[in-house]
Image (cartoon, rainbow, N blue to C red; front, side, top):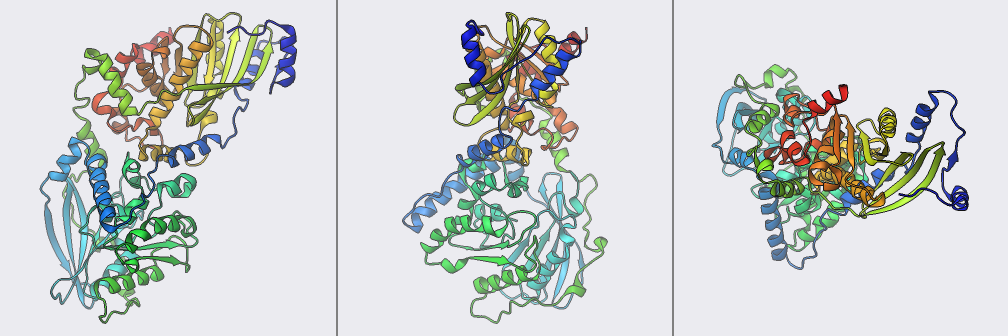
Amino acid sequence: MQLIKNPLAFAVLALFTIGTVAHAAATDSSAPTRQIQELLARPLIDKNLPWNEAQKFCDARVPRMPEVKSAAEWDRLANQMRRDVLDHVVFRDATSKQWRDAKPQFVWLETLPGGPGYRIHKLRYEALPGLWIPALLYEPDNLNGKVPVYLAVNGHDANGKGSAYKQIRCINLAKRGVLALNVEWLGMGQLRSPGSIFISSLDTRVKLCNPVAGYSSFRTRAFFPSDLGDSEQTPNDLGKFADYAQLTAMMAGRAALLTFNAKDNCCFAADHALEPLMRAAGPMFDLRGEAGRLRAHINYDPGTHNYERDNREAFYRFVGDIFFPGGKWDAKEIPCELEVQTNAAVVNVELPAGNLDLNQLARAAMRDLPRDPKFAERSPSAARAKLRDLVHFHDYGVAAKRLGLDHIADRVTWFWQLRLGKAWTVPVIEFTRGTPKGTTIVLADAGRTNLTADVERLLAAGQRVLAVDVLMFGESRIVQRDYLYALLIAGVGERPLGVQSSQLAAIARWATKEFKGGPVSLVASGPRTSFIALVTAALEAQARGGLETRDAMASLKELIENNVGVDARPEQFCFGLLESFDVPQLQTLAGAVPAKHAKDAKGK
């Protein structure tokens, strides 16, 4: 790129360009470093812009409720959505199909006396091969004929099945003649280590559900970060096939009580979570003439995140209306506080030695991955096509906007906003000194403000340097619950890794065209951006001018071996990637030396 040839043009540009500054020559050796640090720290975009763009990006991908004219039409659509979610989300790979098809095992253990009118059976069942779940079955003393069975699932409560409010629910139902199965939730109670509409909508054997402060639409979550926290509700690609609005509507023909809290201090507050669900599901119940089988309850006392007495009595009332219509049924809670077991040892269920956890299951599943280690070497074109599909790569066009100029001696700094497609805005700072020999893009886990040394080193080597913050880093960090937005991006059918590598690739293509040069080089510092850079070089020819990474991981398996959380490296949890590609295969496609060799070369 030609900089400024015409002095008059330079003067006009200086008057009308944001942030244009001319410096006097530095007199001390530390001044250039300090100046580069200050330039890298200059804000180029509004701090909320990445968040706002992520909200719109996710919202646009959530399916809307279809307009239907009959219950039969909705049933056809609902059945198709069920099949799609089960086939393409829940049981989409060989391992999950093996788990699904495994023969379940149950072990009955001791029986506790319980209180007046019921007894408690301890049991455990094998949910997955090697993963046993402890449970308590509250059985009425006098069972007659066909009776409802209540599956009591809880969310995030460290006390798990021993929580007092959960025991009270089960006791009250058992005293009324209902079998109640109190199961432990993964990561809670006895299963502490690393029920919902989801189960109810997909399994039509469930005839009634009562989610309490349970969920909201993906569209709602995009704009209310408080609702993003339940990561188990955001499986990859669910939002491609069904939103929680549709999942709620799938209960038409059965019964659902949606309970929300007016002043919820956790998530899913009534004022924003409830109405979109009722608006979506209500017409589907109306088509059957069953409006009364979809109800809502808003709790005001205490109104915070709870399943206390007011919410429980609303549930009892609904159970009575649906399963015991016209019968003698009192929704007022039966006092049973003295029957609640406060000693965890009493409600604990014996589990087999070596009971597996999720990390151990993941270790077993990854043992033979990638399935075809030579695929990238043998068929690079097919491998790149597969990789593009796995990360959901986009060929974003670029609309570049110059924001300003900083000029000192022979160093010129331009500030850019790059609009990528119609979705993202990425800040870029361009450094040159004299006539560049090539272009290098630099990025870092800690953001571009930590790239001073790289910028100085590369300028000294005659490079044009583009300091970049892709999504979730530096100035492009999502200011509200960033890793949970990453999960939401995956939940609505995209991948954070795909967004980031697509952004970086688009910048590489733009730089090649703008500066009329060959492929650009990439320099990344940190395990996250190093991986993004590696994937980008594997997919984008204009990003294969050279790859230098620091603190890069040698294998995706390190995530599982070190039990790294998705909050630490969200883009690396890219579904299906390890099945086909680990770091060595990506290096083959990128034409890159292994990361340890790159570090050794830099050390020399």
